[in-house]
Length: 289
Image 1 (cartoon, rainbow, N blue to C red):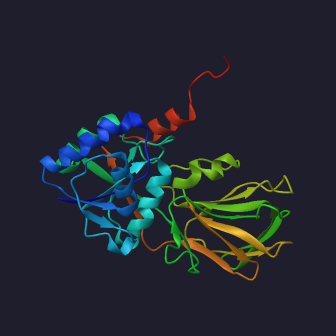
Image 2: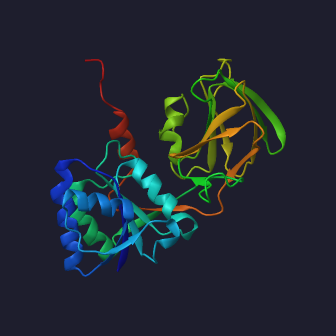
Image 3: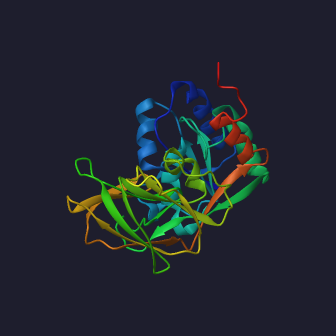
């Protein structure tokens, strides 16, 4: 079995589980390829990983059966950007913080390896949002959301929004979020957007601090195409796809649609989105005391 592993730094408490994982993979004679960034971190920490295969760019990722993300949700988003249209299944080990997407705890890494080896898992396909213009070096897609925001020193921006070529609204706001169901528990949620179950065939349009308080988040079918024209007093604004961002000028035309490929997340058989939702958002708990 061939696997690739991408990760970031992690808490010292996770160290023995990481070391045990590499020992277990070596014992099972699994071929492992590391991202260069993660390989550098492991070497700096003195963690023995027994592999010399690395990749620096997404196109150097070899034909792996699956990819393991070692970190939090942000690391898994990075991992999905490495995979792209190849749709290699990815699983997230949560050695970070929140863990909506990376749901395998470090203590269960050994169980995860056994389950992966025995095929005891399911594939959870998730919709991606895509930007027509290539403004992110070929990585013009995101698992969570596409976001427009004002730059740090500018006043609010105006986002003229067209839905399937029909005028929808001019958002006077600090920005606008186009979220997938997966991203509905992220930035969109913090700005008042609804939570969608992962396989809802929808996008959410969520304004960030709108000037007109009557403007509320809007749920659309994910077959919709959104065209965005942005006006700003500073003549520029910030766009982002998941954790990747850049400043563009107001002459930049933006078209957003569903990507033609999907992210394929590996989930353990006892992994439940509803359980994760209740746990991470403290639903059902009396918070009054």
